[in-house]
Length: 172
Image (cartoon, rainbow, N blue to C red; front, side):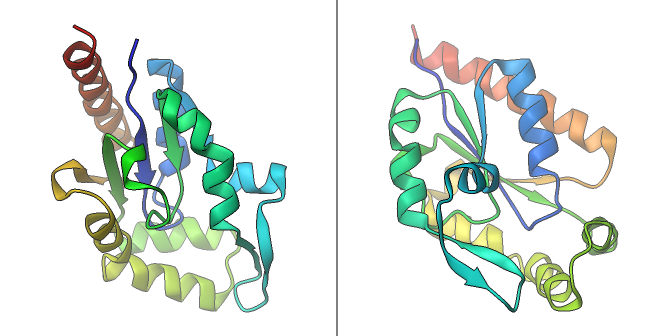
């Protein structure tokens, strides 16, 4: 049976991981958090002192994921999206969060001031949404609000309906 591949993207702290894990448990699709995968497989290319984090080796990430993506049925969660092959995804969801809510979430994570400010600006200027629309066909890129628990539930329901319809359309 053919299954869709979904990309969940957005500024750090918008709720990609929460949504991705919930979707995977309800849909049966496989969930991959690229940050976790990079940590487990050491897919890094140095360290960024300014942001106090490792630098992702994007080519190695693509190599690591390619076979699973060809098989289908994968939900990928990452805060960047321009290095993934366009052919991988059937739909892309960019989560958006009000900057006041986002600031509190990132502060709770212990982000330093520069990292906090840059991520909030990234959200204000819709950097990830623009990256998504430049990297994928515009008709497969959708923005979803991600501020409150009710919005999470609504997003899960909407995406589950989309998955169900996609499976019907591609397996008849």
